Image 1 (cartoon, rainbow, N blue to C red):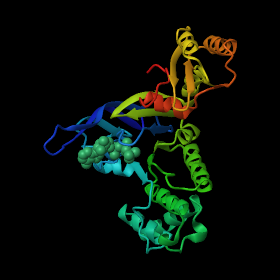
Image 2 (cartoon, helix red, strand yellow):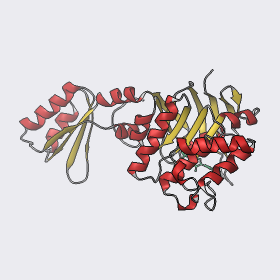
Image 3 (cartoon, rainbow, N blue to C red):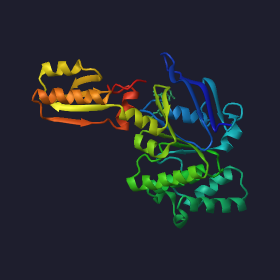
Image 4 (cartoon, helix red, strand yellow):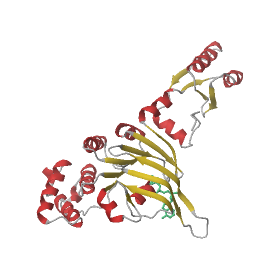
Amino acid sequence: MPALEITDLTRLYRRKGGEDFEALAGVDLTVPEGEVHGLLGPNGAGKTTLCKIISTVLLPTSGTVRVLGHDVVTDTHAVKLALGVVFGGEKGLYERLTARQNLDFWAGAYGLSRRRRRARVGELLERVGLDGRADERAGSFSRGMKQRLHLARGLVSDPGVLILDEPTVGMDPVAARDFRALVHELRDGGTTILLTTHDMAEAAALSDRVSLIDRGRLELTESPGTIGDLVSAYERVDARGVPDHVRDRIAALDGVVSVREDQGSLVRVETEQPDATLAVLRTLVDSGVRDVARSRPDLEEVYLHLVGRRGMGVDR
Ligand SMILES: Nc1ncnc2c1ncn2[C@@H]1O[C@H](COP(=O)(O)OP(=O)(O)OP(=O)(O)O)[C@@H](O)[C@H]1O
């Protein structure tokens, strides 16, 4: 049974006086048990809407979502037990309570007895590395520590599926690295994780597969390695001082996807075959252009292209 099964999911938001806005437009996604699935998309893509529907906070307009076989609309209670949700940012902790008291409160909300609560809370504090600071107020914690406490809270019910919504947002690099190590440990323990992020590198480092979402649609679901292969098929050449007639000749070469002039006279040529790159370089050098650099787009750029922000010639 898949950990997460989303079928033809749509969600409309009512807008006053205007047309309904389609925040999710027919999303299909199946995440097998034990997978870390990265969900990447720009602001407003629909990631939070999707996470809210999975975590039963928001109803779908149409379509179905199942968490470990439980329907989010008709079987809300079972879904809540099967799921842990960790949102990034500062909200959701009781700042005046200690880390231990915060967790004890949440464990109580799941109906654990006092004795089981004590053991469970101790275990969780150790797991996220906060056992040494357990009796300090959450309000005095750094961003990274707060986020570890959020994670412990998401793990209170020992969920099979964990949603991490922008978990490292606002963290310094060391705290983010430590947090990612915790995510790795959870994955090794068999927890299925849906991770939303703006950060392509984070998604690639943590995920078994990555989905790109934009304007409510899943544009692509692949392993980070496959996306990497997609990237490596493309190259670009940047050059300065390229006469117009040379530009036109380059644009006509086989395998050249685009030729664009940025501000400051930089000409960027994008190619989709290694031979094309060589032909572009030869044409430039033969015409006396010396200021030439060859490079590959990184994952971030391919992602930006795939969600329609730039002109790399990657087919959808
Ligand atoms: N309650 C609402 N009423 C109307 N429109 C909404 C509502 N909530 C979200 N939207 C719109 O739905 C779209 C998707 O929003 P959502 O918060 O799911 O995006 P997101 O991918 O999580 O973005 P971000 O990364 O900025 O959090 C956006 O265009 C947003 O303006």
